Amino acid sequence: MADWDPELYNRFRRYRAEPFAMILARLAPGPDERMIDLGCGTGENTVDLARASAGGRVVGMDSSRAMIDRAIKLRATLAADLIARVSFELGDIGAFEADGAYTIVFSNAALQWVAGHRGVLAACWRALRPGGRLVVQMPANDNETAQVAIHALAAEADWRAALGAIETPSRHRVRTPEGYSAMLSEIGFVGVDCHYHTFHHPMASPAEIVEWSRATALRPYLDRVGPAHEDEFVAQLTARLEAAYGTRGALTFNFRRLFLWASRPPQ
Image (cartoon, rainbow, N blue to C red; front, side, top):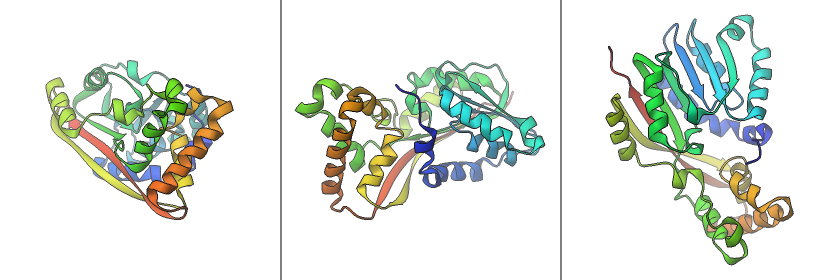
């Protein structure tokens, strides 16, 4: 896929920040935590993790050069104390490996892009110190109107040859809470808590939901149709959403997310 667009992704930052705020309130980092943010994006959450842990250090990792470049620019604006405690690196979170290096492994809206979740979560277990904590959040919104419409449009005759095999990440990679509960327990985690939470985002129109999706779930589709057909695909999707939601005006976008909480047992 083409690289991420940080500007487009952050257009809806106020809504994308809500799951992180919920996580941070429950996580309550202590002093001197050693943390990694897998799929850190533009780095704002990474910095806030450091702020929440007096003396704590955080590494942000992402596979997108555009996102890491933006995160590095953000780091340069911080006070000297935070600069010393925050770092960013380009890396494939699907191949992440560390040995007892962290007290917290954190990932917000990133693992849905990575295949082989059992292997990744086992690597997270190895990366934690005894008693260390894991928290992961992934979109799990494949039954919502917008994603249903994306799949239906891609399967139609005009688009099927180019798009029929593509699915949104949450549809073909993200399992149920029960599935992850069993997986995490089998890996060796304790204190496992996997659950859904639905966020309710006011949107100005169905077209705005399409713009939200262009930054994430629509990326594989738009990459495949290419610039010559992108506007046509987006226009058809927008019309479908206006019909499905029954409005061209304001509405509430209900977005379900999956949260995974677990710990490595104390030694």
